Image 1 (cartoon, one colour):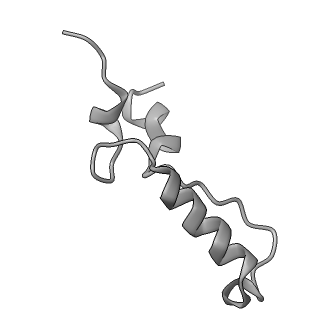
Image 2 (cartoon, one colour; image 1 turned 60 degrees about the vertical axis):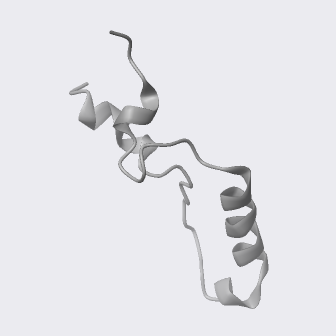
Length: 56
């Protein structure tokens, strides 16, 4: 039984799609983000938390 990263991604158990990254880029370039400062945006469905899931 192999290890599949997708099985551990909290949102929908899948990798991020290019159009989801594009949507975030468009939002950040728009007036909707005019009051956004100093943020780190992870567009990864929760993948950034994989180490917590694996207990590392």
